[in-house]
Amino acid sequence: MTFSTGRGVPSITVVDDISLTVKRGEFVAIVGPSGSGKSTLLYCLSSLQKPTSGRVNIVGTDVESLRRGALARFRRDRIGFVFQQFNLVPSLDARENVALAGRLARRSDARRRADEALEAVGLTDRAHHRPGTLSGGQQQRVAVARALASDADIVFADEPTGSLDGASGTRVLELLRSLAAGRRSVVMVTHDLDAASRADRVLVLRDGRIHTELTSPTSAEVFAATEAATSETTPQPSGAHS
Ligand SMILES: Nc1ncnc2c1ncn2[C@@H]1O[C@H](COP(=O)(O)OP(=O)(O)O)[C@@H](O)[C@H]1O
Ligand SMILES: [Mg+2]
Image (cartoon, rainbow, N blue to C red):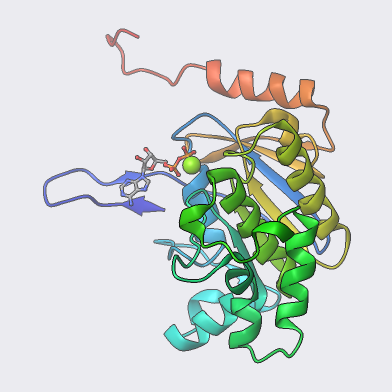
């Protein structure tokens, strides 16, 4: 993924040469130093950003082949998002936010599933609160409930435990873990190395490339690999000081 920010400004490539296949039921975590391209990679994988080159295929559909309307329906039905900024609809209460995709898809059980999902994240008593009246952590859990209530084949999460205290964070990770136990897959960006160690596979990003790939690592192994990716110095042009 290359960004051009303006005429005369050199464009920058922030995600490069990544080939990734996520299996059904797999839980993949992406870690790496700040600015290493984690969010950009997640946006490209999840169809929210069109990569400058390369392809994304989700359950047999080439995402770039879809036109606007079809892409919007594909996202609604097949992809779950849990984002840093939550992206909840401010005018809808928690229950209606969670039920929204199901209702748009005319599923008769949308509200029942929303109630179950809110219960799973411990927010039954906040079902009729709008996002603006919820704390950051509660909004985060509404966003997780929305992914739980959906039929998504794959859920993308960017720092899903970023606004949560220890106990709620653990609960959200357990829920993501259980999502991935079935036929769904989860791809999570996190800087929480304990959280990453819950995943089946951990990708350590550095400068937009996969630096290390770990299978079912301990948090100590994730820590060591992240340290290695962070401390390795980028080659400097001769004469440059670091
Ligand atoms: N829309 C954009 N235009 C220009 N540069 C961008 C854009 N989005 C991200 N970047 C740059 O790409 C790099 C990687 O960003 P990001 O993917 O957010 O990293 P991370 O999530 O790992 O912290 C950063 O240097 C950031 O400034
Ligand atoms: Mg980020």
